Length: 116
Image (cartoon, rainbow, N blue to C red; front, side, top):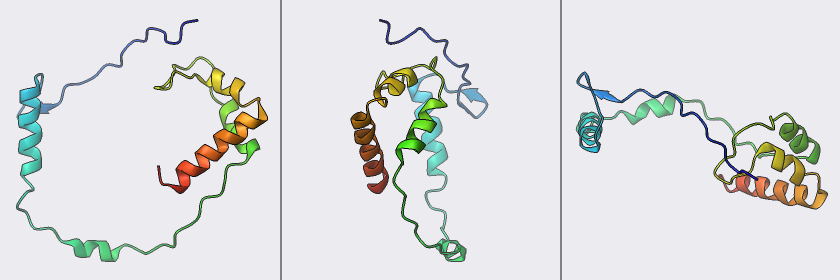
């Protein structure tokens, strides 16, 4: 079974600096270095943060089995796998087992509570 299919790369546009594309690591470093260092000695006014309204923190509700299943079911089976090599079709098969679904929900809830 093929885990990955050959995919066309998305068209990209080179980063430009001073009207020239940065095509080498050296030219990219020069561009990034000069851009970030332009703000090095500028004063920063942190008082603007005081103007932001303070909002109370809300706790995250745990995922329900129904909510998790319905979100996964909406995903297409023909998508490319992510770094874990699992497609949505694989996930749909995995969550058919109630114990697997419970474990995955526990992991998702733990990630949210730990701010991952």
